[in-house]
Amino acid sequence: MAKILVVDDAAFMRLRATKLLADAGHVVYEAENGRLAVEVYARERPDAVLMDITMPEMDGMEALDAIRGSDPSAKVVMLTAMGQQSIVMDAIKRGARDFIVKPFTPDRVLAAVAKLTA
Image 1: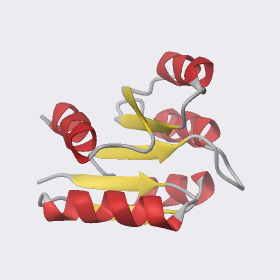
Image 2 (image 1 turned 120 degrees about the vertical axis):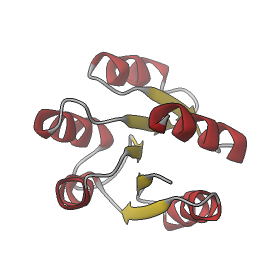
Image 3 (image 1 turned 180 degrees about the horizontal axis):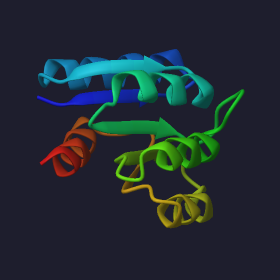
């Protein structure tokens, strides 16, 4: 299956997404903020990234820019809370491939990953 990087400052959200993806057969890496996400991405070169927007140290938008700057073909899905639609549109313009509204459903996450890794 695919290598997926899950980036979220909320440990329970990372755990939930990691378990879901691992149970589906994917290899999963985790990062708790954008700075670590950029480091893990450079080291592991995952097939797709699920990334929260609002995080400490480096937010998801800055990390998206850094990852896509080093790898223009990076496949990033933004995880967003309700009410962040304008930020999501900006993320899409910056190269994010999709977005998932939290709290997410397992089917939505698996569908997004399947689409990106097909």
